[in-house]
Image (cartoon, rainbow, N blue to C red; front, side):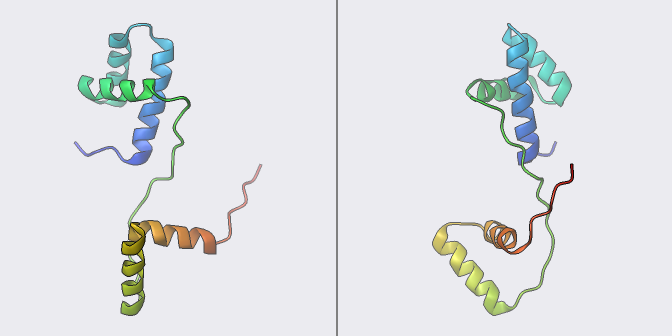
Amino acid sequence: MARANDAEKAERLNHARGLLQRFDHLPDAVGKMVLDCSVSPRQAYRYLQQAGRLKQDVAIADAKIAFTVKLSEALVERLRSYAGSRGLSLSDIVSRALEAFLPRRKKRG
């Protein structure tokens, strides 16, 4: 079975938090979580333990996908050097740069 991505983890933690508010007995919440999320009882207990320490729901981020771009060798070297000196991933730096560069999408409604 594949590992849960960050968005799935956030959804499961939020679901676990709701179950803790609905159920008085932890085993009942575990059973419901196993059915709802297709996780093992052991993993359900872990989510419920983490959710019990939360003060509010976890924000669900957009899922990340991989895509390929071609950059000059010199730019990639600068990017790697910058990432290493800041302790950041290449993805973090590129995401931040694009967020700063691209205009925000206006929400309708």
